[in-house]
View 1: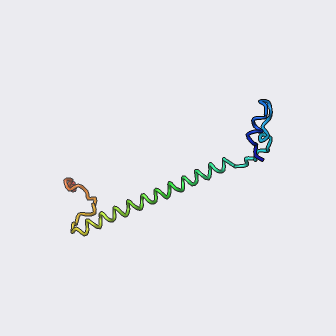
View 2: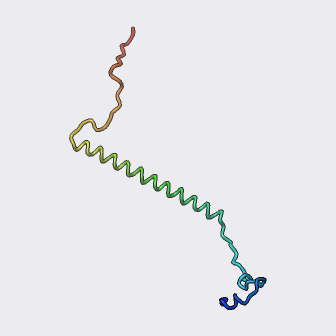
View 3: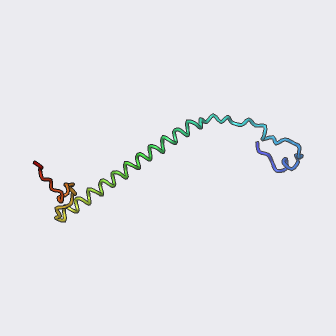
Length: 92
């Protein structure tokens, strides 16, 4: 039932609002559970984002290596070798 403007004007300052007596719906939302689910969703999305970033970087690294090989270079992959300035002579 809507309150008409004329009815509002006729009420005195001490009269109660008839819409205030309606029962309010019960809020049975489990906010703690909602917060937990939101945190789980955020963590899942971060893991997915990390996996995407890792995949894109791996693909880019492979493409750089392939371009190096296709250009005919032979030093595309760095191989760690011991320094050549240190020569150890066996002591007798």
